[in-house]
Length: 94
Image (cartoon, rainbow, N blue to C red; front, top):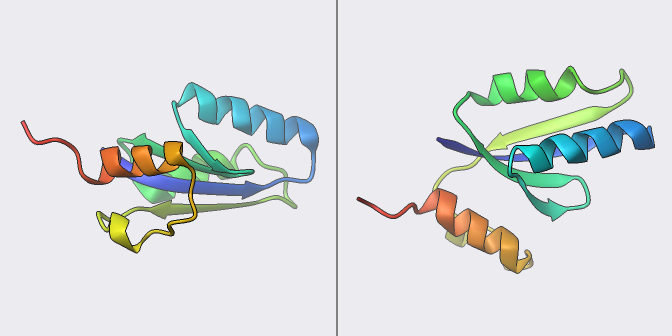
């Protein structure tokens, strides 16, 4: 399963609320106001296309697939974000 950072900038409050609700349904972790971390079994282009299909023409979206280099992430992130990043980037081995 791939880990992604998803950011969006929307002009309409309704679209913003809808996207936030969708992220929560996907068990995404809120990292910033419109920045989410989530895990999906699809490629980054599919994530971006899905997100873009929910935006208006003047809105923007960025999708970043993470690599397993947590030590390169900022230390200025929330405790929940750090826990999520640790879990998805360094899963326990079976």
